[in-house]
Image (tube, rainbow, N blue to C red; front, side, top):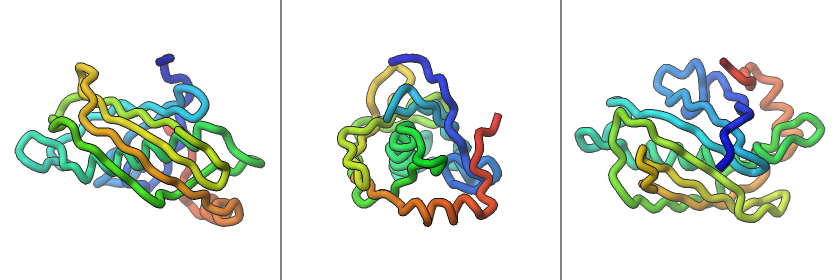
Length: 160
């Protein structure tokens, strides 16, 4: 895989990427190419399930966001980001995910039909072992609805 080059924008209050959400994960996403994203992150004790192990719901959340952001890596239409929502999400957990270790999430588009897309993603352990993988069906948010969302003070921008 090529090295990540372009950091994607984040919002202020999103649970996954929000820079001001005190309970959030504060994950930054980078485009690896058209329709491909990568994020490196570490989960702390606040996201624990069994002692020392990340909660599966948190992993599902990270995969959902990562796969959805693959669509953002296809560009924008008339300056409006290409946002989609999840219609179906399927996760397969392969290995327990330890806390306090850097993890890598990747997402990519499998099939893009414009108003809908099939995406996939994975979370890898530091040694490259795939710990969780997912697939999702996404549907587009109408451009006028996206424009309205962007008019609100969501703080959608690239943060250092």
